[in-house]
Length: 162
Image (tube, rainbow, N blue to C red; front, side, top):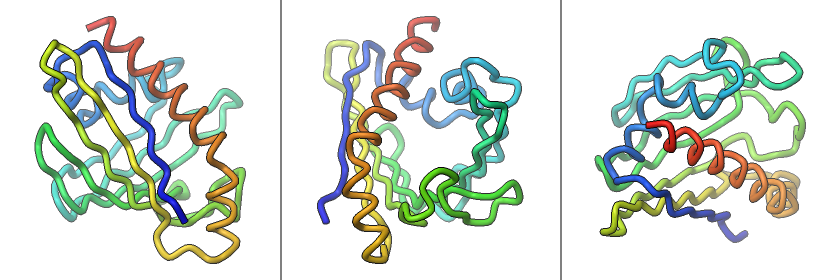
């Protein structure tokens, strides 16, 4: 199974892109731009720490996730294991795709392009997927690309306000 990778160059300096990705106050404004007050976040940003979050969706339902940090290199890289969660922070199936992998190794890399822009690259690899989860992951690439494109556009719009 091939990992899934996306990247985008943002018109913002590295330190700002890093802050927007690691500070819950910033994250609420681009992850939940229509309802930042509804964004739930409990973050312990350190190796071994966790980030539990909830994002209200357009239908009013909240989608929860949990991340466990494995590696943090400030302004360079964040490696974490990411899963969907229930409202208590327990790992749960994807709310719309129960055969999606239960855990993803997520590597986010930050690169200063030297001209006031920053490249952000994200790679997802399923952790110990069942054959069904691996197939669902492989078949979901177009949806993941679209989802990340939407998220990157939200980050760009938020960065433009800073």
